[in-house]
Image 1 (cartoon, rainbow, N blue to C red):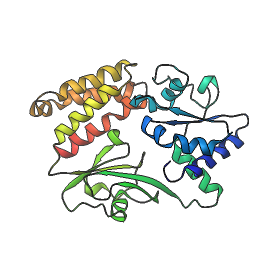
Image 2: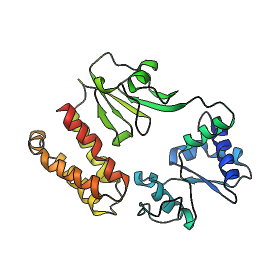
Image 3: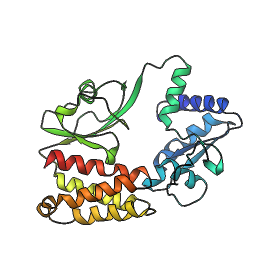
Image 4: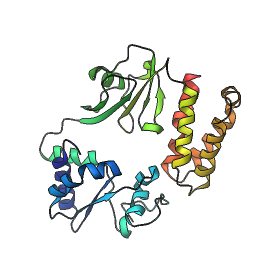
Length: 270
């Protein structure tokens, strides 16, 4: 949105032209809405594109939760099926894509697509930022090309921000699966148990409380992580029972994906 807003709008124009009698929404968090509102309004002109400011709610980014939010309802996920392409915004078939998708649609239309994607790199590294690189690059190649291989022992969290899995240096010879997010941690300086406590607090505070597995499961993880580390590690079976319940019975992807950082950290860092 900062560097390529025209390409994003061009991609949306193609979608609007392809799907007759359609309308588009650009759904932005508060910071991005304030930063890019004027620029986008100038580019949109008379096009049937509306800007919408996302409320301060993590779960409001889930694809059906954002539909409820735009409709003025409580930001919570819907039961699927029906999927948004069947019954979506205001009961109409709806495509939900991220901004990057429309950027690449524009590039394809211009004959400039070369099989790249964007990757964000954060954490204990010197060259933080967003980088455009081949989608087939391995995690190690991404770090090498951006001069982000740390000179100290490290681990990374990959593929979904707080929901990303923990990976060790010897596991990085594979492409990223999921969101193009890499967070680098200094292994010597990171208190992994405190990191896990932070995840537990985040998920506990940001689930929508709609379904029992997610509401109760994430609370139990948060409660357990508040205990002494040695006690929790000696009773890991309790955590794994909760993980299994979340993965098998949660209504939306949050509950099913929130287990990944905990499971991989417990398996690889303790």
